[in-house]
Length: 343
Image (cartoon, rainbow, N blue to C red; front, side, top):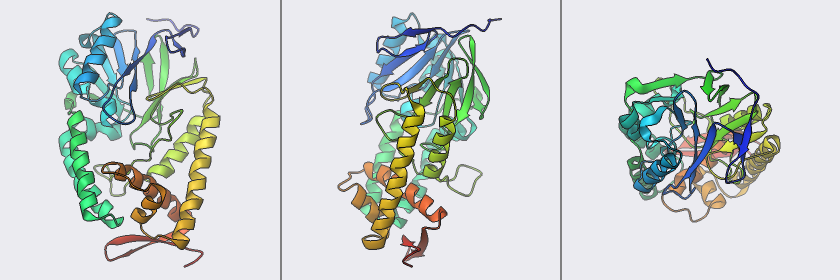
């Protein structure tokens, strides 16, 4: 039995104070977001939090980082996936094949992780229909789907019998401490953060990034559900919940650590509230469909970036509709949003 001890911290080479058993491993990705921070926890076997995408330079870098610490894939006993985006779990199948590791993630991520290829196929029709109803030209929707198909090359399914679901509030032993799973949907509907109440350290994944406002990614209903998640509304609610925790240091998946979480949350919420007002104003004068709004906010988006732009716009329109500030009118197969004060 390991005795609970007073939190000890050290300084890593990046100057970030973290627990002495928790190592930051920064590895490259082929995506515009840049490198990803994975976290390696020593203890009764190794736990790796997120993996990076299935990409040869990423794989080589992860092996090298582990080797520099005296470890290899075979030493990993658990892989914790914070959410089911390919830059966070793409190498999980490779690690499991070499180590037999268990894969832990929120229950909403089960199908993404264990049936990845069919899950992508299931979602193509949803996205193509959503882009068309948003007013995007069909050729633009086709390009987005083609980009998604390329993205699917960066991950593979893990064996179903290696998957272990996590739920909000579950205890999780890391090092000699008992951490807690914090469900934080928004950027992804199955996103989790990890929180240590003793040290007040938060592994924030993509939920909180110091220099990037996380995108509320549009998702279809998960299997067994009929309504799609309202990503931005969920994201704002999750941020406010995280801000209620006592967080000394947040360790994100991309970029530098975050020292003042409440201030960052306040800034993010204020940003989105201002954008809601801006979108409402554009609907009053200049646009009706999500694609028209997307072109105003993010002109000249290329290929897959259109998906991120439309996700952002639809997330805000969801909130405007929920607040009664707009109503959605479906005519000719298009979603048109009409401000209620001018209707």
